[in-house]
Length: 76
Image (cartoon, one colour):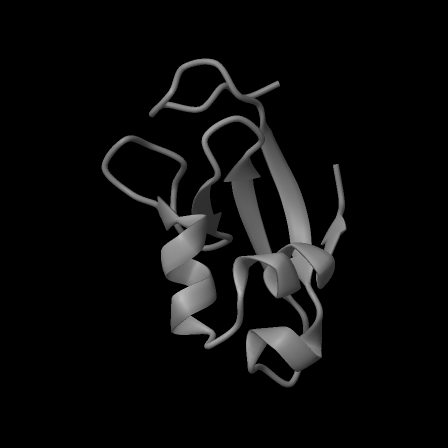
């Protein structure tokens, strides 16, 4: 189990954003903290020097945070 480097409490969870929400032709894999909602793209290391907020990710995808949560499939 990987612990979040920001809040040092939450677990890092792997999830898939469905293709229709990610703006990609395929689903996009992300990792997020189940406590503070920091998000990392699959291709970036989980560290306190990387990552973004869940809010900023939703904003970048032009969707609400609720829609983003609804369109995620937890992978483990």
